[in-house]
Length: 151
Image (cartoon, rainbow, N blue to C red; front, side, top):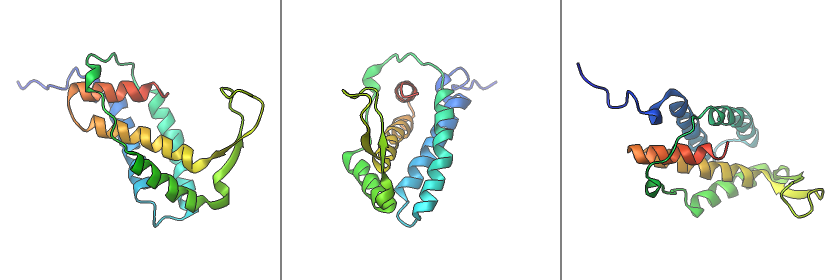
């Protein structure tokens, strides 16, 4: 009988593979959004962000054995490309007002950017999938533990 090396490996469990799959779809769409319409992008984001949140909230807690295996992959240029593309697509609808309880004056509305928020999520998801794809136990462990902190 052949032993499956992944049989007891939590880093390849169904909830994790589903999260990585959704994160990959999110990143792929944004990286190829030039030809998409504003409404198409907004419809996609409205559908996938709740799914990302659900999959992220279902991730198991993982204790990292080798934190030195952690890496960041998403570059400032990648983030900026997604941000600028989305900001251009959204136009005047990019800005919105929000109350940030962590801000000095937690009752003062602040202007925020939809494109910036989505680009930030893109950066986190890109780091997850790139580190996970290194396909070593330590890399997968760090990728999942890092993304779990965001949920």
